[in-house]
Length: 203
Length: 203
DNA sequence: CCTTTTTCATAACGGGCATTACTAAACCAC
DNA sequence: GTGGTTTAGTAATGCCCGTTATGAAAAAGG
Image (cartoon, rainbow over all chains, first blue to last red; front, side):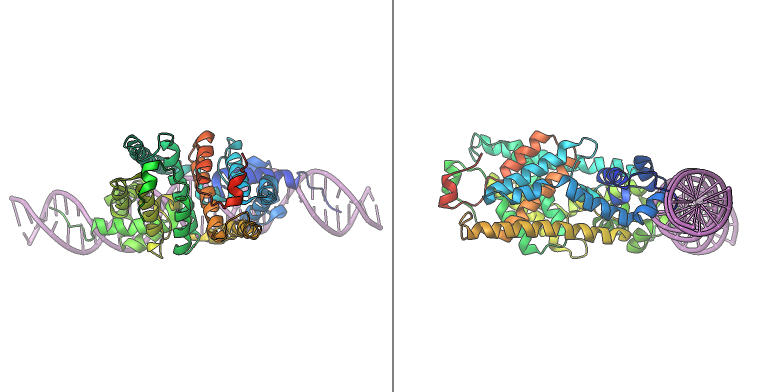
């Protein structure tokens, strides 16, 4: 008995998930959550518990609603296909929704409140300058015949930056150094070579 | 004339830099900053301006004090060496100081206050399960002869996760989809092959 | 020594946060 | 229809945040 709930719990959870995706855990306030869900604060508390519990529910829902490509990838016959499907699925998901780019999990603590937007922009620019330096250096390498004519310097620079960011996230997660070193070595396995550079390697 | 400053500005900046490195921009409170620097709030304000200005000063100092390996890398003769030095330098820096692992820039908005520690741990575990699934899948691939006997499945899994995290960070930074797709393709360039898998490729 | 100037530390300020009393309304059982 | 029970929405609570007013302490000039 008693009064009926006037909102759909799953719908509200989906809306909350989008807010967390965009703003991260700490960046999402209850003001944001009530606005997005159309549900007042006390109702959110009674339906989900506190903010942390709500975020965990959102994480679980993210997994079941957006990460279907992951089991898909794991079912493929070859490891290369698995990795390819995994990476392509991540790219697709990270860019599909313009209002919530990136990965829910990474953003979860990478994103922050709106007040931190200038700082976020400063860091983006900072990383962009580093990437630009890398790209210019690679272009010089191509001119010098150190990279093949077919090499895409911008992509190589972005790739190196991506691996670096991935390493940073993993280091933050407590990965042991040897693991990270192995990852870095693996990242170099596909480095483009031409006849000349293939002749004499470092290390 | 007037009273002398009783603390060293650069020393205080170094201490503040460590706090930001560990806790990120929003996660670092003035309570943390005063404790780490030994300088009271108003003195920090008079010396550096507000929190945002202090963070920018810390970022600049991070660049000059910790990123020396970057110009080092750029000076090397081959692109492969540049990338190798870059990645190895990042690994070294990301793991050198146990009290502030990871990258200042990435942590800057990835890290958060201490209250968010359970959430951070939950996300770490979540990513770890995904990585474990990937590793098991690769081990199966090795048993099936799809990966060479020499393949290190744990490293391959960590590598794929790292690239995925890097892609997420870049997507968050507003990278265009084509760029990310090129990065993902590049990440597959060094995928280990054996005679059998080299024979018949997908895509 | 006294005035002026700068820095110091305590303590306050307004604002936003997560969380929760509290009251009115809606519903079911009887 | 009435009583018991659950939800809705307003508004309050306490806390911590970044920032700053306030007045004492210290240094230099005359």
